[in-house]
Every structure is written in C-alpha cells, then in structure tokens.
Amino acid sequence: MPLRDLSEPDHLPALDPAYAHQRPALGLGPADPAPRILLLYGSLRQRSFSRLCIEEAARLLHFFGCETRTFDPSTLPLPDQVAGDDHPAVHELRQLSLWSEGQVWCSPERHGQITGIMKTQIDHLPLNMGGMRPTQGRTLAVMQVSAGSQSFNSVNTLRMLGRWMRMFTIPNQSSVAKAFNEFDDAGRMKASSYYDRIVDVMEELVRFTVLLRPHADQLVDRYSERKEAGVPMDPTTDLSSIATARV
Image 1: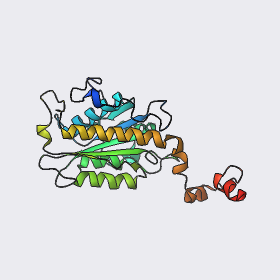
Image 2 (image 1 turned 90 degrees about the vertical axis):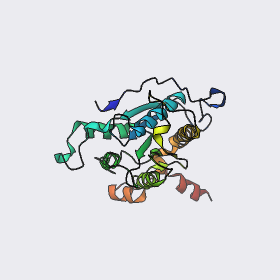
Image 3 (image 1 turned 60 degrees about the vertical axis):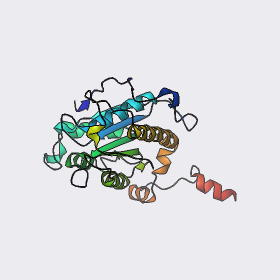
Image 4 (image 1 turned 180 degrees about the vertical axis):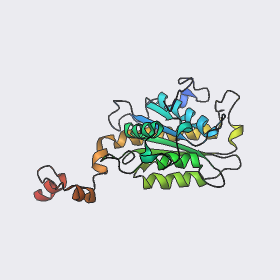
C-alpha cells in the first residue's frame, strides 16, 4: 500500500513542551472524532527533505490530537499513463483525499517551482469523481524546502493550486531554506525558527479544520451545482428563506 509508516510518532526533541498547546483548537468546534489529515511530499530521494518536513508535521499533528496518513508517491504513474487512471496508487490517493478533512502539501523548489512529483499527485485528484469531490472543502497547509536561500515560489504555487482545488488554504505557511542544514543524521529536524514555524502552521491547520468542521457542507453548497443536479431549495429548511420571511 502506498502509505508511509511514521517512525517515532511521539518523539518531539525540538519541541519545547512548556510552550506547546496540546489541544490548539479547544473551544472552536467538535474535537471528536480526531481531525483526519493527509500529508503529501514532492521528492523520491532517499533523504528527501520535503518528506522529512512532512514527517515532522505529522508528529506534531499527532501531538495535537489528529489522525494522519502520509502518501508514498513512489509507485504513482504519470497522469494519463494508465488507461482510465486504473492504478492501485491512484485509487489509494483519491480514497485518502476523500477520507481527509485537511491536508498538508510540501514540495521542494526545483528550477523555481514545485516538482513534477508534487504536481503529479495533485493532477491525480479530480475536482469531481462520480459525484464526490475529493478536495473540495478540505483545509490545506502549504510548505516548501529549498537547497539555497529562502524562497516562496513553491508555496505560492501550492496556494494557487489549493484555491483551484476548492480548498481552504490557511494563511500561515512554511519555507525552509538550506534544508540540508536543518536535519540531523537520523533525519530529525533541529530546533530552530524554521521548526517553530512548522509548529505554528500545524497549530493553525488544526484550528481551521476544527473551526470549519460543523460548516463544511454549507460552505461548499453552490447554486450552480444545485441547478445542474436539479435539486431546488426547500424553503422549509433554507435558513436564509426562513430569516427573510420573518423580517
């Protein structure tokens, strides 16, 4: 199965527990069941810094009370390479997206842009799939890693793609410069302002996911889709109609 196991899920050596809010979304909405977060990374290198960042993010999300799944893109074909997209990795990716309430995307910056691996994963997620929408209404956090100085090209592109995929992309983001300096030999991120920013981003993702959870269906309810499906509004259940009638 194209899922990556998370090593040391409860070991957070770079996190100072004195300042960590273990339930950052407390009071914002229903906390049960645990928020479901899908994480995607954009490199197949053995020591992939985008994957290492994603793994640090997943550990933090566990600490904040979330359920996480990290997709392994190593067996994913190119879009349209397999007739009808009938490939186990494509099916798995789409089911994981449907399962998720929020997502985290992290890409390296290569030639000033996101990698082909990252874009391939997003391209395999259709806006509409048999009446289901695997990305619409999900929250999204975007991150990038760079080999050189800090840049925001990849996160800007990921943010644009998230909007195109009808996702709620949170305001905060992470960009790790000279990523090769930020991890130890075991692949764990060192304590730094870059790590602290990832903590901030994951806190914010959890908050927005829980905050939007009770309103997810209403926020993506569209006139054009109701019209196309031939589903008229019921004035007895439409809150706006009820409110107008009472004025």
